[in-house]
Image 1 (cartoon, one colour):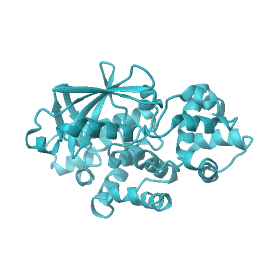
Image 2 (cartoon, helix red, strand yellow):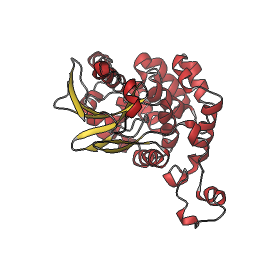
Image 3 (cartoon, one colour):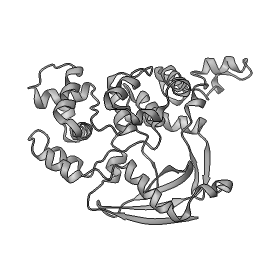
Image 4 (cartoon, helix red, strand yellow):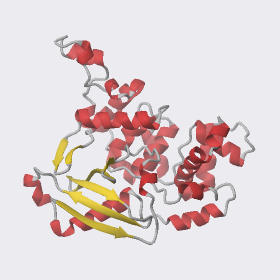
Length: 329
């Protein structure tokens, strides 16, 4: 059974642009009949959300409860379900962030003001599940958006819990307690089965999902989060402590750490810096001088302050769409 409501607000969001902007909180939601569909959680109950727009200042939401909700019905407060869904949608798409005020900030800097023309309505796309953002960010390192998003979708399908709705089956992202024990590659899977099947049929391992050399990083990080670090405690840390904490995860350097903190935990002072952001900032602010990635990161955090994460998001999208990225290659 489906339900629906609309959300109207003074601010704005471009849902398609936000979904397809390559933020490493999660892959874009599944497109079905003009709607973006995925799971959110209310009191640990999966709810299927279908979001679409009539205009840039509203969102239309359809939602479904699982077909086999059974005993979980008591966990869903029917009276407050719509209110709670609105709160979660507000959080995921950062709808309380004042984009118009941010655009005023951008307009004060001649190097930034043109980014709005290419990115109007672009918002942070925050993680439903911080663990998925951690794995997505690790998988994104030195990888294309198409490849890492496909690999995360594969991980969901191979180890995530399938949830049945009227609209079909959707997969939850697996917990670290499960991923810590999965096989890294086909040889490890083959050995665990004592050669009972041919190697070509060993396809339930991390490398078969397309994560490549990042497979051991994902597995070891899952182990750390299962045994040593409570990933929810990171929400309560200040930025510097959180940054140092996620740097301890295998395969996580400063850029991936900032992606995790920005998209997984909402630390807007994070400034993910890779070779492209280095080139963009060097071109705009340092006369194209060869400034180190670490210095560019420091500059971004100090210069843009509370808007650092959003500025990075807008600059990267602007560079992709305006042709600046091709110019800087």
